[in-house]
Image 1 (tube, helix red, strand yellow):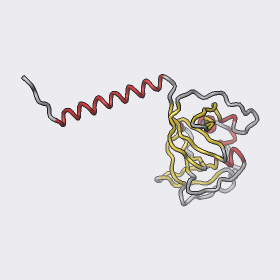
Image 2 (cartoon, one colour):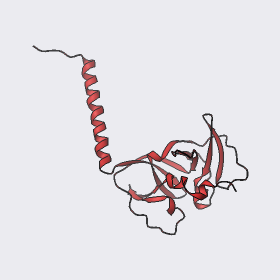
Image 3 (cartoon, helix red, strand yellow):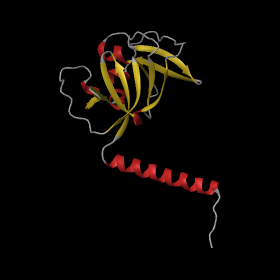
Length: 178
């Protein structure tokens, strides 16, 4: 005796199999060092920040209020969905050069339990899936060294792995008042 299954039941089974397959694939990849990051640019440097260290990325708000008597790298404060978000110019903090805001500029919000702040970035390239662990970073006299966890070469680009966690614990970053 043959039983006929409805097409909706079959599609439901196929979706379930696909979902379990994807979950198994993600777990398998994470065991082998595959990780996801957001690629971005500050000045002429390319960086990756692990995805878990960011809350969100959005265009630079049109209304930003300056903060008097603050460090020059404090970009201002913006109202983000009813919450005041302190903004910092990462290029100015790292290199002493102001970021010229343009259509590629973005704000990246740090995912930190104690610090709610956004960083002005020159350009965001989106998600990058990295298949290797970061290698040791060679430049020793660079101002970014305290915030870099290594480097990764991908698609003919050397990406420095930036740590928002290290930035958020830096005493100079925490003391934004001039």
